[in-house]
Every structure is written in structure tokens, then in C-alpha cells.
Image (tube, rainbow, N blue to C red):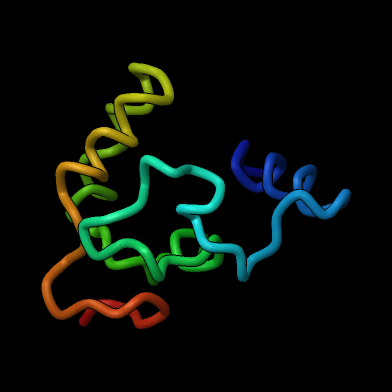
Length: 88
């Protein structure tokens, strides 16, 4: 099981987080750049329009929480991508 899966399950059980919550409501620094409509479910099922950041984020996680968030903020949403739709 992925650590993120366990963290999500632990946050969902007491009602702290749902799949329909907007990511920006829990991580305000995620707002803007075309990411405002991204719900928790979208990165979870890989339908968030942040694929460029997603590809580069692996090594960023080794640098702590701020590095991947900064990477996603700098990248923005992919052009023509809609939250909830898989990339072609």
C-alpha cells in the first residue's frame, strides 16, 4: 500500500477529507495556474491536469513537502486538460 493511500484513508475516516474536496481547500498554495477545479480524486486516479509536474515530482518528494508543491505551482495545469479526464 502506498503511504498516500494510508494517509488518505486516515483523513477520510473521521471526515477530514473527501474525494470531492478541492485540493486548494486543503493546500492553499495549490490554487491558481488552472488548478482550482482539481479535486482530491483527480491526482488520486491520475486525471489531474498536472502531468508535467507529476513526471518530475518523484525526486522532489525527497526534498520535503515544499519542493513538490513548488514544482506543481511553477508548472500549472496542462494546456487543454480538464480535471477528471485522462490525457491522450
